[in-house]
Image 1 (cartoon, helix red, strand yellow):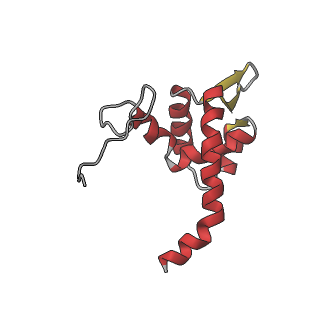
Image 2 (tube, helix red, strand yellow):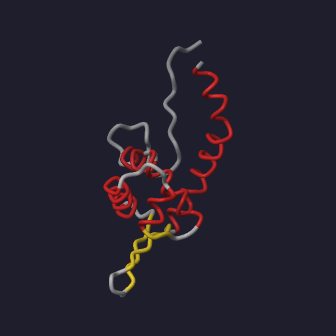
Length: 123
């Protein structure tokens, strides 16, 4: 029996197991607590900043702004500015963001369903 572990190679351009792969940065961006919650909130409907802040309980203004900037720069969130006074900014998911959020919504659902088991395991 071989004691060597075969490296798993995923099909496609990224390899998150490689420390030099840009997939690591994407993984870091989309799996932060705030990013997951913002993305799932936006999957329900486009939101303005203040509505997002109310929905994602506990996030500071600074952290929400930083998270939205990161998600926008990665192509997951679209920022639309309406030409009004004052300008109204709305955030929504891009096609890439909607694709990602299908997976994250399942994770959030699983966590919500199983949190009693986790709390019990903690003792």
